[in-house]
Length: 389
Image (tube, rainbow, N blue to C red):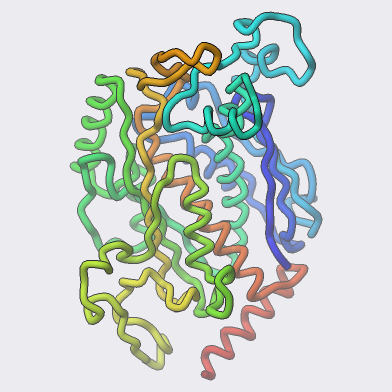
């Protein structure tokens, strides 16, 4: 069985929609936990006014009955509260009026999809590009990942995320357990584990916002409790770390990804990079360290998955950059849409769920079945195989 999903909807449209195909039957869904993950995405120091307007809640319209999946495609929507202010502008029906009434956009913003999308699709109103390319679409991607998270939790898998850096401010390393990490970051406005770093990051974001600028950063996702052997070495597109990297790079504004120590491996000797193999009766085979972030040969090795992604500063600035009007071809300063000074804490939540989705896909490919009962049986048989190896 293969998991897949599609999303539809615009940032100022009536709703965001997704259809998930491939979920097994008899997966019990916790709707409160699902909406909690959507709420996490809306939090974070530096977010703009849009997050005060929206109160994201997932509504499931198909594929679930009496709290359990049926094996049919799951249809899920999240309403846009801001739609009421945009009904005429974003109406699917033709409307009478000039460009001002339609809120036509003709000045592309540097760093956005505006100009590229307009040229590619021959659209003279760049709003038709920006409405879909907006990071608002990540709302339903978090919802999709939240369902995948609940699926993996049935097998003892835990997911956490944290902010490693915002601009010039880097969080110090720590050795917290995944449960402690979840608890501490959830209490932090910037998803770090210590208050001193939190205060420094808040002050830094305030300074950036005051200057009319924006700032990016680095976020990390950790997944514990996975067995050896998710993914495969036999074909390029079956390597799970590669699939995760593609998923992370598909998140709006992400410009880089690394697994484990990542780019640092280019500075070190082999003896300082590779994880030595150990064995004990209690643990079986394991690694003495986890520099490779839970992967060898495109497959999980039983150690925690550790993935980092870098998010560029949001390109919508309140001190706009230079651009060119597509009507007159004259130079202008780029138009300003409502934006955040820093969305790195929210990006951490988004990346958690993107990575979780890819892991859930690989898990279901390995232990596939049409029902949760069948998958549990396949999983237990595999654990016995590993134990007897």
